[in-house]
Length: 357
Image 1 (cartoon, rainbow, N blue to C red):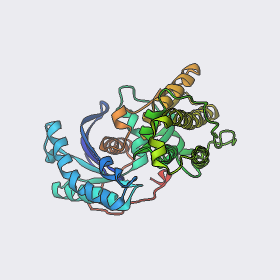
Image 2: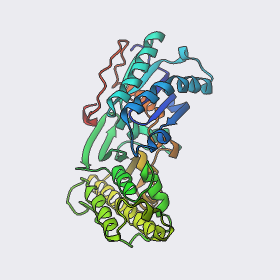
Image 3: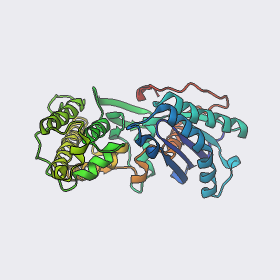
Image 4: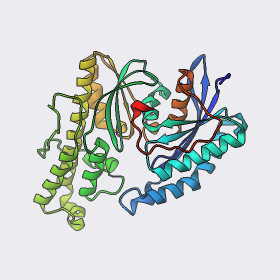
């Protein structure tokens, strides 16, 4: 492109949140978030205990255009003021991704503007650059979103080295699956964290999978199984009445606290190991689990003792959102890595390794 885009519209529709945002790219300062809007499908999926892909896709269709209008109104701009339309190309649910890609390509074509597909995890990874305390390259990134737990060395935009990842359940899945076993509503992770407040973290002897594996990989499936085993011993597994009984409350609070503590300890110690292995003094925590209060507190204290800077996205940008997609597009364009196209492309990537983005 002969002229770099100045205003980037980002559309996120990879799973159960529809996000739209407008980011301003200015060569003289960091990218600026002009406006963003988000719709969560939690209430719709709650009755099913998890995301129903077909329902998710249909809801994205209903929400994306009104959200786009809201963002442009909040920014005090109109659609012709957009210079580039970015969308989540993958990974995610195929049908949900196609909604965002279809709307983005149709909108860009109607405006005569280019479009650009963005990797969902790159959006999370770069999202702290919209915070009040943005990081500087290089840094270690801990990506802890719903289905992903990865440690990466980040030397610049598009320069990512995978150091370790989960071999089975991700941290977010461990939160959600354990919460479901305890009878908590979908999405379970935040409910488990709230239940854990005031609980004893050492009340239940739960494993810290792969904590001493000698590498930077993760495994959380065994932790979920251990939670299930304790519920079987208590006689509460699949017994909604027993789990809801006020007499069970104190024990469940302790089990939730012990579960959260096990997950957080693994995330913190593996992150510290990655920092020690690379010699870097800066770490970024991104993704939905990055909003967890205990994780922020424990990692913050551990890094402060070691003289390491920790960076997070703003809390409202930890979940999936359009701002991170617009930002990633802006930063890729700014780094000269992106080739926005005027030709519509619908090759969404439900499975897409970040290293090949």
